[in-house]
Image 1 (cartoon, protein in one colour):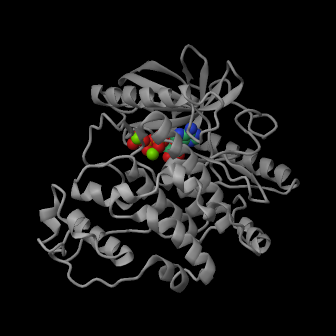
Image 2 (cartoon, rainbow, N blue to C red):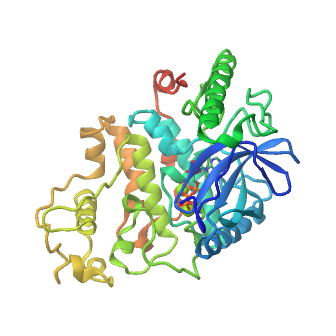
Image 3 (cartoon, rainbow, N blue to C red):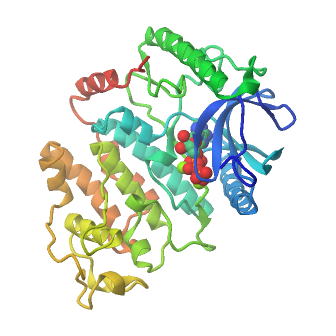
Length: 420
Ligand code: ATP
Ligand code: MG
Ligand code: MG
């Protein structure tokens, strides 16, 4: 992909936007872009630099993403709405063409990494609550104030915020910016490994210092100081990122949206969609945080496809899809007969959410009931019946405090210590 129209190859120490930004290391990548930690010499802080592939089609997508990110930033002058902030954008000419670049505030690890790092174990419910509040704050803002649908909400696209703000105080956080091209950087990979090693050593030092103050690092060894969180585990803040698939509710351009496991039934059936598709994905995400497992992980099987399996899994958890909904979509005939029964998967084993939470995930009965009471309405098959983000924010579950959470937190945090 590092060819004409593709990714821009970045080396540590590379300068962007007339020398304002200096590349530090890679943070992540997607099909359209690579994302780099960069040092902003104007503000003396770290930023995330998203560099799009250069072909026309990718540039167009980036322009759209910038438009939506800009609208989100314009309406959130206080930066309190749990949506990643666009700081700057510019074009960068490289050997593979002209690349649109977005400069975003530097955030921490994604919730997906956190789940993986926790080895897919359940997260303490008080933390899930805090994360849910942030996501809902972000969604309420996007939906109600901006009229925007995110369309790709999932753990990977929710990033934790740092409490010790490495972005604003790089020196104290133990991560000194690289201001010049390191020696021999022209030679590529070997040098990159060396630099990675150096960064890991630095990261370990940072942990030692910080752990003296009873603070742990949540993150992988190659992502030093990205996410630092205090032991009380109460202020788990996060933000919604990745507006590459977002759209205005009154100007939708795609029929097939969302990542498979987080996809709402009306998207599968193609019966039209709106803001409530994000609510569906939100419920899937909340469940995954609380249990470590995806809520729906459909697979194709003997004689049926992934879509039909997905619909079957939904009905096993939530009951039968009302006939009107089942047969009402452009794709309904592919999966349902005229009675509203699946064509190829006939036997469904009903296992409702509250019982799943107690039987499989061993949640105490009261906790399971309360959590299911929060999630089930959001998983309504009728999109109009799902509560809005604003309504969800009022739900009592978000303001519950679990007992014995002290023990839990200690146990949990020991798993989150950085690995050398
Ligand atoms: P693509 O559109 O190219 O397929 P994508 O849409 O998934 O990729 P993003 O989700 O925006 O791209 O970014 C990819 C990854 O880069 C993220 O999952 C995350 O690891 C990292 N990343 C993105 N933005 C930030 C940020 N602001 N701070 C820190 N890391 C970030
Ligand atoms: Mg993404
Ligand atoms: Mg994207």
